View 1: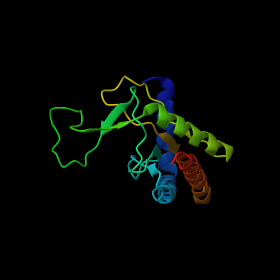
View 2: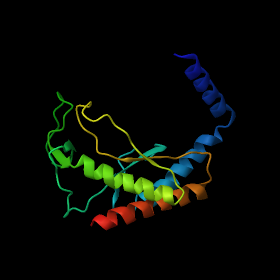
View 3: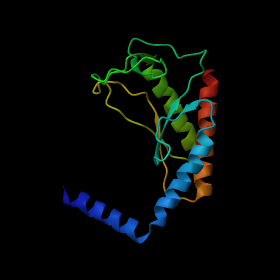
Length: 170
């Protein structure tokens, strides 16, 4: 392990030992952010509920699925009732999505949130390098360094940005 990573890891462990309340604060902030974003109709959150890194995907209305372009990829859908294949990592059935369209929409969400003073970023991926393409998402990193009120305010800005951008496309 490179020296700088070892020192950073060691310091992180020391901080957690000296102030264990930091993890409680972080989890409270994550719950506060998720409480706001979980209720938004146009946002899908595939991240684990305890994760401080929250990925936000566009949830399209069921009647209006974005058009599938020739450069689209697919991702899994596990609601079919069919059993998975334990000998393959690929899903049995796939749902198509338009990578370019979703990346453009998410970039507009990022710009709208930034205009309101909240910095989020699109999750960057190396397309074509994975066996199964992952849907584009906005990555939101929750921290214990902010107060609960600041986290709730930031989540409200992100919520409004999604509603404004996705609402224009409906």
